[in-house]
Amino acid sequence: MMKETLLATTLTTAVCAAEPMQWTKEELFAVPQTFADTGLEKYRAEGVLSFLLEGPRTSDGKTTKAYAYYALPSTPVPQGGFPAVVLFHGGGGTAFANYVQKWRDRGYAVITFDHYGQEPATEVARPKRPVLKDSWQDRSGGFSEGNDAQRHLWVHNGVALAVRANTFLRQQKEINPDKIGLLGISWGSVMGSIACSLDRRFAFAALCYGCGNWDRGADGSFVKYAKDSFEPKYFVQNLTVPTFWFAGTNDEAFEIAQWQKTYQQAPGTQGAALVVRLDHDHVGWDYAGLQRYVDAFCGKDRAHARISALSVCGNRVRATILDPGEGVKRAELNYASGAPGVKREWKTLPAEIHGDIVSATIPSGATAVYLNIFDREYAGAWQWPVSTDVAEL
Image (cartoon, rainbow, N blue to C red; front, side):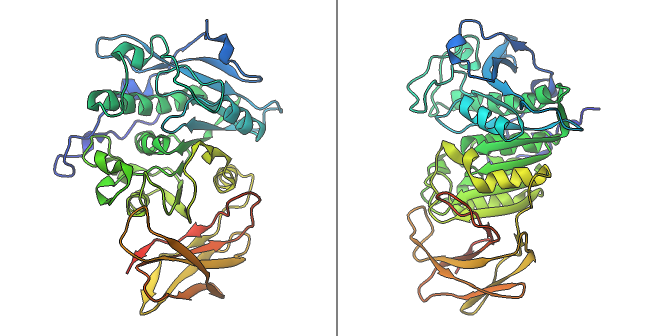
């Protein structure tokens, strides 16, 4: 039996400045139709099925559609079915066929969709793309993120499409319904955190950059949306789906205090990785740390190490290794001076490991500190820690 959503109607205006955005069960959980990509053949990709995915109807009852890619691995179907992922792209992104191919080749069934209601891009350097006929944007007459009504319609449709993508996957006999996750990037994590809060059928989530609690920001770009009706803080207390969060210390969109409060609110949080000066881009699905989390959940890899909350005592910080993962190989203290904000300069020093205790001395003048532990060395530009919370001193 399909599990029901936990709708935002359980919240009251005493919790938030605006009435939280709401969805009907029909908008979220209707089994979506699919439509042929007639006339859009130039966007087809090798080994990938392309079609139009049905979104929620407009206020006057008209069907909306989103361009989607879907693929299955070429290997035999394993016992129980393939694990699967919904790829939820970020701002300025699209349905990326290359990422569907990459995750297919990693052994996953994959679906992604363009939540802007546009035709997809044929190249990474995305030019202005045509509006998809009969999409929500086509029905509404356009889109501007700065237009309140259009932005709300965009988010409303994006969240519903993610839930419908989950339903689509669950209809496919080759897929294991107990191993369907959502992988969000930036805006895809903002909307994805809401989707997973409403749809508990998702088995796991990996959320890169995006968060809520925008009123806690100083100079990040999402501060301007702090009172909006789709603020994730109104929803994530219901995010029981096992979730791992990835972010960078100097992300200009999402600040540390916002991100940290959001993952602390979510009951399903299993860990967080705060990487010093991590780039903010569409490439999050390539991140080895994110891939490891997904693989581990699906029984293909060893789970990350785990660490306790940070303790500050005088000029020392410490935390306890709760699970060593593959064996904690090193630890680091990250610290910054000055006031909170995206321009803070973060520096790194080695931390001490004695048994299951990680500790370090706080440098003079530091105003914020946290610890990272590493149980694996990764190829590529970034190393992927498990992080404690950040303490403001």
